[in-house]
Length: 100
Image (cartoon, rainbow, N blue to C red; front, side, top):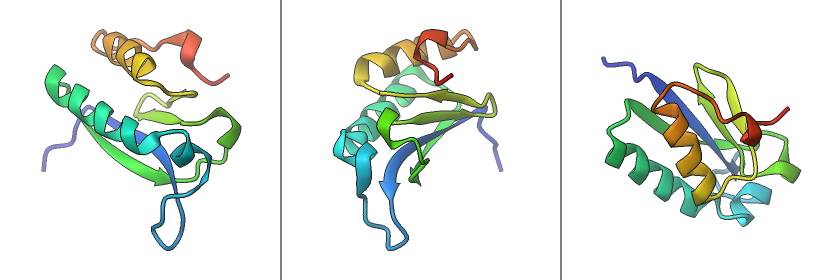
């Protein structure tokens, strides 16, 4: 089994019953998921994307966590995804977009 270089976790506020709810979902995480997956594929990055249940920082959502780097990004938009992926191609974080 191939292990990807990066694993992206996008909060989609899923609850125990599997229903997407909460802040990140209301702020467009579902649409961002599709955009993120398409961009990763288009760029040929060795990465997979998973959605998560609540990451408990709702006021800063949508949240994206990149493992194994432990990079937490907040207030995600398509423009921020582009910046994050541009930097990731150089294996660098975007400090200005990261949670402190």
